[in-house]
Length: 471
RNA sequence: GGCGGGGUAGCCAAGUGGUAAGGCAGGGCUCUGCAAAAGCCUUAUGCGUCGGUUCGAUUCCGACCCUCGCCUCCA
Image (tube, rainbow, N blue to C red; front, side, top):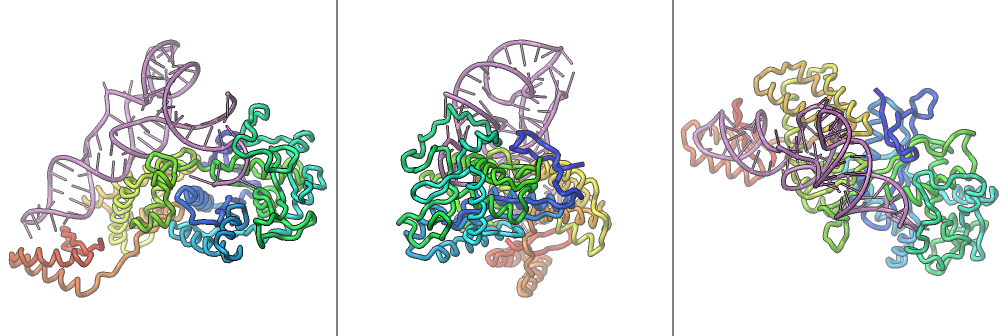
C-alpha cells in the first residue's frame, strides 16, 4: 500500500509518487527556524513532524534528501543584534547552537543539509537578477527590489495557488501600514532590501547597492540550489501558507528554471498550530513554553516528542502539561513490555511480526495518522502483556515482536530510556532485605526498602523474585 | 468583510452511512507480610445545537452557536 498525503496545492489527499523516475529518491525541504531567540514548543511541532515524515519515507524505502534552512538574517535578528551589541554571527550562533541542542533532545535526526541564508547571498542575488530580467521584479529609488504581483498575474501566472485569494476583498494595509513601503503595490514583497541605518553592519553589496535579502527569497534560492528547481516535498507551519510559501512559488516559478510542465514543488504539507492549555500560546497567559522551559520542569525530550507526535499534524491540538505527565506513564508501560520481551528473546533474532508492522504502516500511510498508529502499538502492548502473564510467549515470538518494534521505533524516534546498572551496594541491600523478609523481620525489610527508595531505586517484588528499578 | 480548519468521555485524541480506536486520569481486581511496582478488567446509548435525507446519521445536507488560523516578512 502506498503513502497518501494531504497536498495544500490541491486541497486533497494524494498518493505520494516521487518525481524520481526510479521512484526511489525523495527531496524534502522544511522551512527552519529564525534564530533570534529560543525556539518554542509550537515551532518544534513542525520540525518534529518533518523528522517523522522523513523517517517514515525512509521506512517506506525512499532515499530522502532532507533540507532545513536556518534563517540567520531578518528583521527580528537585526533588532536583536542591535540590542545585544554583538556582531550578527555571534548573535545568531548562540541561538543556533541552542536550537540544535533542543532539536537533538527531541530525538530529531539531523537534516542532510542545513543551509544558512547569509551563506547564500550570491545565489539570492542571482535569483533576484533573474526575476528582474524576466520583468517580474523592479528596483525602487532607495535601492530595494520588489516582486511585482501585478506583472506576474499580467503574464497569466497564477498567484494564489495554495489558498483562494480574493484580491478585491483583501484588507490590505490593515495590519501593515502601506506608506512605510516605497513600492508599487502593497501586495508586492521584497526580494532585496536596501540598507538603512538601523541595519548597522548587517549588509552585503549587490547590483542595487548595499542591502540584505528579503525573507521569502532565501528559501527559493537554497531549496532550488540543493534539491533542484523542482522537488517533491516542501513543509512548514500553516501560517507560512500565505504569504511565505505563495511567494516562494511566485519567485521560483517566475524565474523559469523548471522543465516544461514541472512545478517548483509537487507536494506542499502544512502543520497546524498548537494550542497550549486550551489557548493560543502567549507570554501574558503564561502558556508560552520554549523547549528549555519544559525540560526545566523535569520533562524529558522523549516525553515531549511523544506528545507532539500523538495527534494528527493537520489538526491544531491542545498541548497540556497533564498530557505531558501522562506521556511518562504511557511510555513506561511500553518500555516495561519491551524489556520483558528482551529478557525472553535472549538475543534470539527473528523476522519482524508482520501483523504489527502491517497495522502500523496502514495507519501511517493514511496521511501519517499517528494516533491510529499509537492505537495499534498499545493494542499490541496489551495483548503481549496478556500472553506474557500467561507464559505463552516463546523466545522466537518475543524476538519477532522486538524486530517489528525496532522498525517502528526507527520511525517514531521514541528511544527507550537508557538502562542504568544497579550499583552493587544496592544489590547487597536487596539481598539483605530478602533475608530479613525470610526471617519475618519486616521492620528491617521495610527500612531497607525506604533506604533504597530514598536513593532513587524502587523494589519490584515479582513472582520471579525482587528486582530494582530506577525511579 | 474575505478565505480556510475545528467542536467526540474528567483531560488529550482516532474513526465510521450500521451502532464509538488508543493514551492519561478515575474505579475494581490479581500479586504481596504490608506496600510498591507490574499486569488485567472497567469507564461515552453518546460524537456542539436544531432541523432534513435515510430502514438506519456521530458520519451526508442545511441553518445556527462556539472556537482556531490566515488576509503581506508569525511554526
